[in-house]
Length: 288
Ligand SMILES: *[C@@H]1O[C@H](CO)[C@@H](O)[C@H](O)[C@H]1NC(C)=O
Ligand SMILES: *[C@@H]1O[C@H](CO)[C@@H](O)[C@H](O)[C@H]1NC(C)=O
Image 1 (cartoon, rainbow, N blue to C red):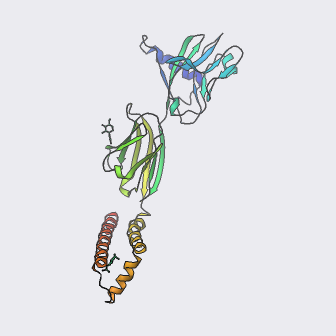
Image 2: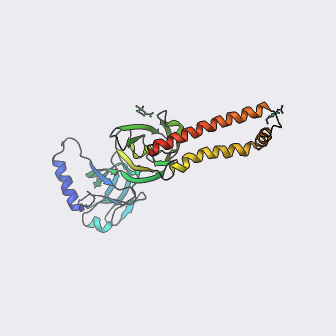
Image 3: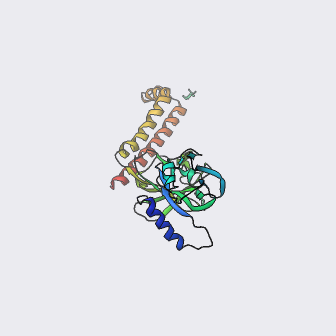
């Protein structure tokens, strides 16, 4: 659609009209690339006034022309007077966004010429994150969407979250790792096994809004895995300077304080578990 000339588009649309139920006014979909100018075609020799308005409310005018000039009634909607004089009433939407996905009607002297439904192409992007980093997904559409995950080795789609009216609802295993700071949804601490496709899909019409090809790289994983363990030692040491000192004294047999020893034993137990978990994660990752 995008590459055809206005003339050919109209021919194509007229052909479609002939195949459409004559009882219902046909609505033609036109797809725009997000934020890239798009032209809604309309051809008629218009001796009076031409308007582009909301199909459902003809008083809601976006742009119009009469015999003397063309006016952009709403910002971002333009008609050309030079084109108008040649019978080309097309409307240019200079920076289409999701709020502009509406059904527009081109009228000449109060009779409909064409009705067009503006849609926006799915936005595809490739994202690289390192293990342990956060994945950020743009959910900036006004309607409810679902977030779908499709892993690399399975064709099955898993619905992980819903975003409705700026509120987030996720599957229980994702809940602690996700947050919504509209329009950005964050999925924290990505794992290597979570590479794959993340889809933001309209919940009602099942139309894909954004598709992210996410690759979680491994470079960072060995370091970040062990780092969390080292950070725990560091934090403990900073907040337990006194116990450390006492611990050294105990080692030399001079102080007996059972509470301190118990704290130390608890900490070493946690550390042991943490290190064991990290060791298993690394072994699993390396396949050893
Ligand atoms: C999202 O909404 C759909 C339909 O309302 C529901 O079936 C599904 O369980 C919801 N998913 C989550 C993760 O809450
Ligand atoms: C033992 O150490 C703890 C923590 O440092 C301290 O609160 C407590 O008073 C000490 N007990 C004795 C008997 O010294």
